Image (cartoon, rainbow, N blue to C red; front, side):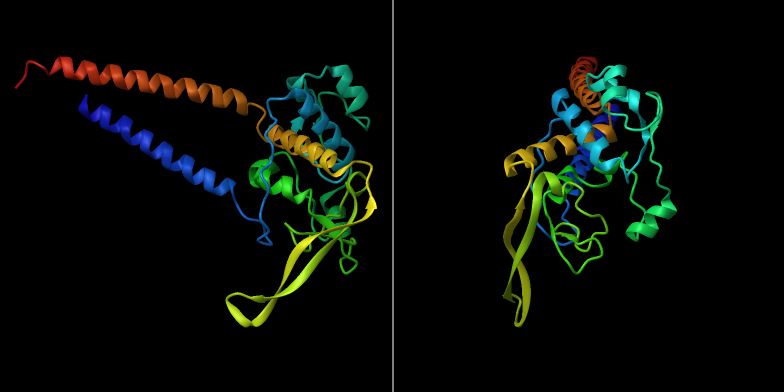
Length: 257
């Protein structure tokens, strides 16, 4: 019994360590060392997920596929087959089909220099904070092939597909001395300059990006809320079982000296 208790305690310790490691990986930095903003978590809000799904199929599903997800999985966020067919399927695909695109990987590489990644689990490959900041830090850059650049992912091959919503912006940089080496200077981002207005106001755009990122997070793991609920139940069971085992062990050995 003592060995069982030691094993259970060891499992709990490993779980805590793994959780801490996972948290550290989630709070990852961007490729350009640009600080990441915290993404609102709305995976338990069907209205937000439905709006995110609308943005995804209208702006992302042209170049990026989601081949691990079927359209009918959107029933889980409160949509009917008719709503999915009428509002979210823009091709001749059926409700039970996978979210594929017509563009081939070869064509994507030829047009963008790199095949656009499948977005089925992108929110797990990247943190939601990374995605939230990425979609909000595009700026005009005439030196790139697409005419756009990004603070989170410098020299990104993807154009700013949401520019009509956000408007066109320029990034302002200043030359400052490197604090570690005064003989060198570095370019530091100091803010954006709005060149043309977008369809949405800045706060409205950020709010819609939060919905999009939440949908990507849900799509990467549609059962995550259920997984977390079951996880809490399991941890409570283990806690109660450990207490009962400890009391049973104490009662069993109380008369043995």
